[in-house]
Image 1 (tube, chains in turn red, yellow):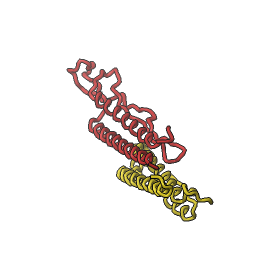
Image 2 (cartoon, chains in turn cyan, yellow; image 1 turned 30 degrees about the vertical axis):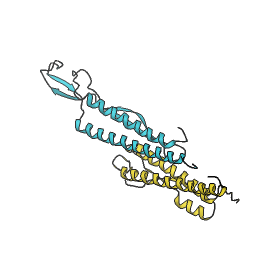
Image 3 (cartoon, chains in turn cyan, green; image 1 turned 90 degrees about the vertical axis):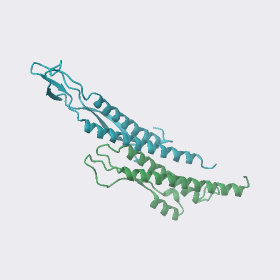
Image 4 (tube, helix red, strand yellow; image 1 turned 180 degrees about the vertical axis):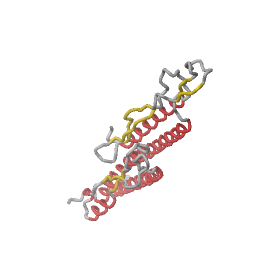
Length: 135
Length: 118
């Protein structure tokens, strides 16, 4: 991390975290209707695991993606006998993802990203004014 | 304590204030970056009181910048970052920074006038 413009790095870390979260939610929505046969696992919802990062100043070094967690491979077993993937009982498997939940998460991630862009801009302006000292 | 004409108490206080404001800006950025991080507690930077008393004794370099955890109530995920507060604090902090820079520039301008260069 560069000491000189530390705040820009902090804001960038936040933008990275929220972008990763947006990617995960987009992936969940993209795969929300995936159908698998009952002997295969369903698409697993993705969850992003985030931790705060620390630095020596105590003011904090931002956030970082610590990993991903996955939802239930059981999904929902549904009765759709006309589906080509249906088993002998007429059952298929769909992921257990709620579109409403994903839409809320996408809003949270988007607003979080925007808030970090805002702090990035503020920090940039502050550094620019600091660079004018003594002119 | 020797008083240099270039670096006197005024510039020292302004310099120290810029340090504190810079640290606060970083803390605000970290709080916003951790807006949804479970268990994260917002950071708050304070230096004004310490700088005021240090300036009163004529030794602004003794002022300390302290970082504390916010005691605001936490949400269900253990996080207590308040986005409205952070955005307002960022705006106010940026204005304070500009004011401090303006103060330094005015001071240097006076020095230039005294030196006689324009």
